[in-house]
Image (tube, rainbow, N blue to C red; front, side, top):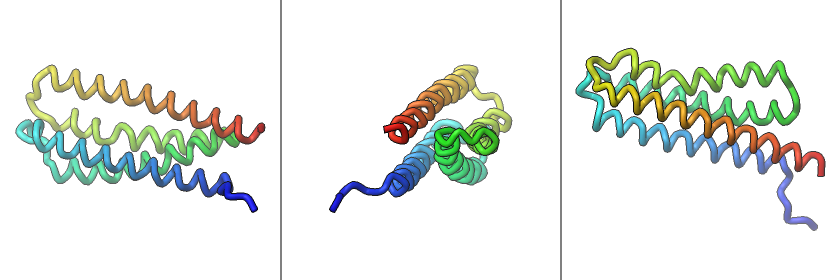
Length: 138
């Protein structure tokens, strides 16, 4: 008898773990905005709602995107990629559009972090797709 879990179960576990990590990151972002940016016109409750909802969307969509890319389902990949993008940009779009008279450094930090984490997400997505493709081939 083999102790190895079926691959689909492992993918489901990893997808759920990914969503949990995204939600943890969302909580940290909400706390950071509460500490540093509330004084600039950011409504923390609206930001928290947008952050949490978009994090759920981002976490689920990006996990599904990896699956669809690995399966070479281009049409579905485009749909999940679009939803991933929406989930990713919503909180920062709110933050940058509603914040009033924030220091220039704040805009630079938010935009720099968004770009940096987008690059990390793209690399992570590519790596995950390649791992699945290698597992399918072998």
